[in-house]
Amino acid sequence: MKDILIKYMQRFTDLSETELEKIVLDIHVTTFEKGTILLHQGEVPDKCYFILKGCVRQYGVDESGKEVTFNFFTEEQSATIFNQHTNDKASKYSLSCLEESVLVVGDLSIEQDMYDLHPVLETMTRKIIEENIGEMHDDFATFIASTPEERYKALQKKRPELIYRVPQHQLASYLGITPESLSRIKKRLGKAHL
Image (tube, rainbow, N blue to C red; front, side, top):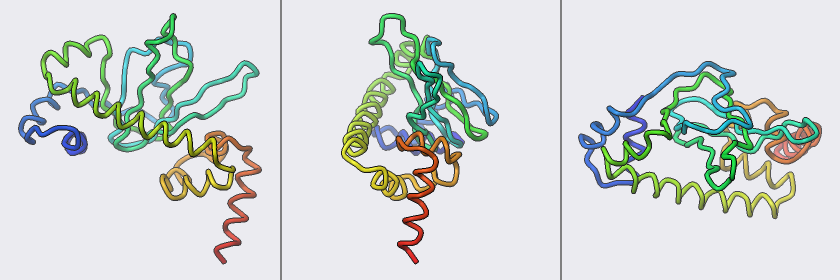
């Protein structure tokens, strides 16, 4: 599994595969069962994750008790809650494994130690975060300007595997619609392809 991580890291550095293999020796990979809660809403995050295999859902429960899905992280994506800007550092989100998941687990308390041990990691992490933030801004702008049907079509194009891997009520929440609306959209689009 660590070969997936090395391949991913090569996108953000000029280090040789041998040099990356040395870094990866200090990285912890853990398998989590389906349903494992990695982080509960309200907890202070002390770990960050990179998905080698599986699917992790980011969600929250609002004041009325309604569960809202904000994102799904799959292979070669990081699942990290950045909340250092808040006073209490508590997460507004939960992270849960929707499938058995193999994850790189980073300990935020030793993050600086890892950067000191492997200085290139800090630059690599910054580049990864910059890419993720850029994608997030683009996705958010597109989401805001789109109709529910356009959101679903964009999902079909960009992340089609989610349609089959994720429970439909969670997918509907992620798209900002009801499960019934999602069913109608899928039915309408299905008829259009006949």
